[in-house]
Length: 219
Image (cartoon, rainbow, N blue to C red):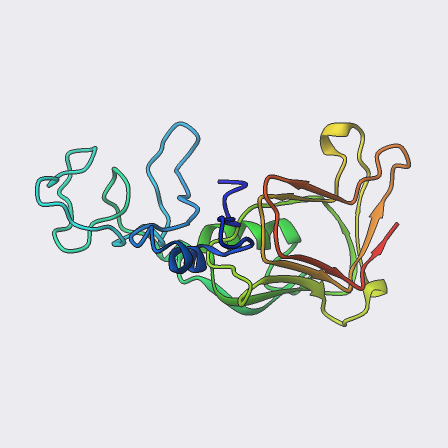
């Protein structure tokens, strides 16, 4: 959930979840992952990060729906399921955004990263052009100080990519909203707030750590 991705302790701060385990010597069987529930009212998980990731308990033979638990590697949570190919494998490497890119827009790219997570550094390169959108960036499973999520211009020049939004009220007064998302780099992009009365570019909520904004232009 938002605000829990960066894990401060009395010994250290700004830890990703794997490093927290090492420092605290606790949470050995815990997983930090977006569960990808079917809906807000149907809490059957669909995340590949939870599939076959549990520890078997001999006296728990059925899930909440009365279906048999996998004996050796049950799923984490109350439901036994098989993650579909649509939610795996995790993302890594370089993906492009824009016309003829891997994703039509930034929201589509962030949504897939949230669902699948990442297994290595993921670079989301925006092709040259103007993008009329605003985006909420949640915690991304698998991201860390070593393997961050990077948003950047495909040309390396901020003037080639403009992300703009015409906010009409305080509720949508942002272009990027970071909701507990850490280990994020934003570089070589131009952000244009089109309404002089509602002109926030970045909005941070929850615990946001290890955020780098480099060579960007805010208008």
